[in-house]
Length: 303
Image (cartoon, rainbow, N blue to C red):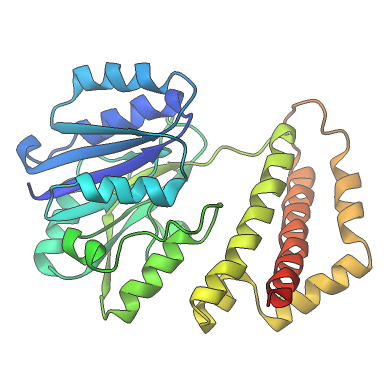
């Protein structure tokens, strides 16, 4: 088996079938790749969606069911089951283009030991898709981003896979990327190895969830800095003196209160205006830095 596509899913039945169809509808030889899906304890219609997809599978399709344990443990379960020489990581909100597998393999043939980073085009719906052409505005500077990245299977196994001691949301990709960098692994970028990344415009009903997620990500940022006290971490997570000083000042003038007032009533789910969306993003950002300071203080207080 030349390559494994690995993804994890949690309560995204409506998206999952379309994503799996994209995995099955590849121009690559069906005997050259497999799909390994980890169902991380979904409580929606995911099992039924998987069974429907199984009937349409054109390549080897392996499913692992586990209790809800988080993304890192799910990734590691997928790595353990994979049989491909290389493993491509995507998410359950990522739709591969038909030549996706072929392009990853083409890059690996040219650079056998490298990470291959593919391109991602953000879309609000999978129903209406723009042309599959990567543009500079779609660029991501992430060294290892599991929205669309591949690596030799033995390489990811050699570093121990994903750090499953980090249970909350955020930064697990950066941790893997740093360990790969430290091992001397290089990365190449193939803009033709494309996916569509589902990124719907936030609504009023999403704001509180966004805030909770930002706070979890801040707590994870402090954990990451303990593992990797490196400038890349401090820059990526915002855990550095200039950014922390700016947001300390913003807390001092109660900027969050102003942003929340600009959002109005969030009790009814509705579309956000452009101004409200900017206010929501700023409010989420302030929640992140407030939680970051609290998590740093708790870490410092530990014996």
